[in-house]
Length: 521
Ligand SMILES: [Ca+2]
Image (cartoon, rainbow, N blue to C red):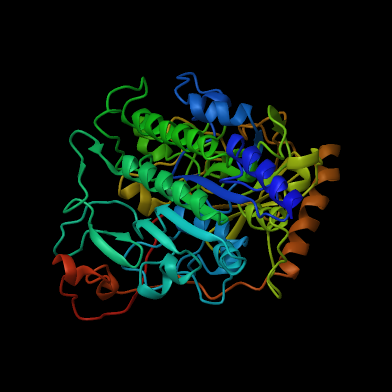
């Protein structure tokens, strides 16, 4: 008995002087997950990816402490499908985040759309919830705004943020977007959560930072594994930054927004260290799609890549990506492994030793072997634009089956996705069909997709059959889901979200009238 007591005293003394209060050395302990997910941030926006402004010291530090991916991709060049793919591990064509109303159009979830994430999809948040994790989303959801699609129905326990983009509406014929705290709305953008279009000032990023820090504190105390999905949207137009950050960047308002997010990442890194959660927390940084080149100097940078958001050129699909897990991933690494946002699902399941949901076809792979041991695996990238497969990458080669710069209807409303970039036969004004003789590029020698490899060369004749075989195999097993973005109705907008009555923000919906959504993008 006395020896037991003295052992206890030794344990107690050791614990007081170490970190037993927040972290046990239990080898079965599940790792924590933080995904820092940016909106319209480009491959070339961070100092560690070569941006000359060098205004992202915290993200650069995160990269130096972890692994930076050079060849990391999204599954879609626009918000909603990209976010759905991240959380389902599946291509939009498989999870339903596309439209068949028009050929090859990008579609998403504005508030007149009926669809959203199908109940049949198993989100990573749902798997982690079942495994005992506490899950929080901070920021933009964009997987559907009707009650059945909201995050607390899909594996998240907590939410602070909005279901749609922070665009300003008239607030009468089209309601402003609600901001939720968990199940209930707490106000609307512009009415209650101010975004000043004149000055570019808004306090939202500060709120998102605070939400993350409070959650980390609480989870450390509760000693419960967590998944924090941190999705600020200040770098999506209309851009914003708080008063404290406004006017500081050499890049204008976009740079101010980036600097404030970088500051937030620094606060999260400090908090992890303070709570002794560093060694047991996997943190991943990326963005949902390429920088919005149509916003000109109000958009980000896609580095050396062609065009941007909305396109299937590298500027639309290639993303910044940094993995950090001090206990497991060696710092200072650069990986050329071809990765995809869809890979995070299986990577996180592997990290937590959780089994994959049965009967689900995944498009991602686990990147854990790459992150831990630097192994490389050849795997394709499929570049869909809506319902149409535009391009495929395998190894360093990329084949273009279709090219399209900007649809006419998008140009008519002032959009241009390749401003200042024109490449003959590649940045075509019309949708050009090259399926009979696909254009071939080598992304190692030519990351900007400028120089077509002639079809008579031995290189083309050797490589193209391999790329076509990859597409053939992909199509053979593909069962497209029911498209979620075909039907619209002004009556389904955010008129009366849950909680509106408590704050006097309910609005009367118009008569229901179903119509086919149109997508000018
Ligand atoms: Ca986006």
